[in-house]
Image (cartoon, rainbow, N blue to C red; front, side, top):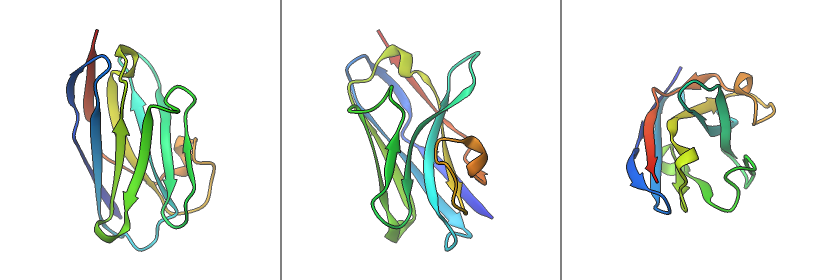
Length: 124
């Protein structure tokens, strides 16, 4: 099993930036990709961004393209989500996820492990 721990959430004004981190531990040698999803109050959990663990593949939701950047550090089993030009509609709990097998990176069902989430609040 992979354990995932997110950090870096908080309160920021619109137009500001935050960087989220997700540290993976446990069964980390078998991994296809990792990603970020978010869930706003009263809404479903939505895909934000994903990165393949080997190679250079990344993918983003249209709503965050050009503002968010996902990256990874294989040496310390950590992924990051740099969030710039934040908007109030980015307010949500952000969840880190890990997938052991190939699948469509935008689907929740592709991912086997989930973190507990970190709150991001963007004030207007």
